[in-house]
Amino acid sequence: MQNPGTGYASNSCATQANPSTVSAILADLDHQFLDHANTFEHPFPEELDDADQARIEWSGSIVPASSGEYELKMYSSGYAKLSIDGKTLLDRWRMNWNPWFHNTKVQLEAGRKHKLHLDWRTQGCYFRLLQFPPQSSEQQQRFSVAAEAGSAIDYYFVAGDSADEVIAGYRELTGKATMLPKWAFGFWQSRERYKSQDELLENLRE
Image (cartoon, rainbow, N blue to C red):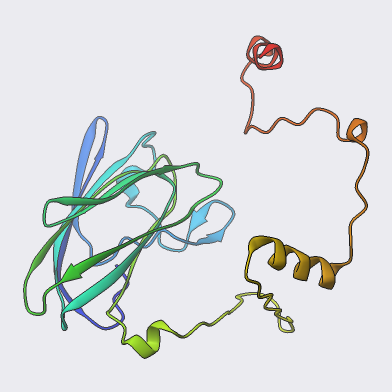
């Protein structure tokens, strides 16, 4: 777990992949970015190379340096459940091709060892747990925007007292779009895939 400002105790990881179990001591489950092709910057243990459905259980503890409300951001795909002190904070599933952040906040006490447990059914997916320490009231009012790609980007802030006013301001920047006749839109259906012709036809009949 990335840790910008607080201390944490050791974490143990038991990786379950039929028919074997692999145990290891890991300070961080860093499987957020790919290095090339389908290879992670920080690959899984070699024992999992042939695993079809690996399940990782990561247990440890956090000892905060200061008391207050901490924000936890779980970047994941597959199925992941995060608990602190026996309380489930996040229980999420997300498709592998579209990993993203799941956020939660928790009150932690300085100097106290808080138990952390993670259950992640990888499905060949992505994971990273990030934490951010308590912020002052002044820091909470700050807003920043950054981009990992692009050296020249213009940002526009569109303010409004209602959603309609915000949309109107956006249209002022982009220009008004021509509304097409209804017949031009055709049939709209969104799904990752259909596994058979029967499944596709059944959805059409609905």
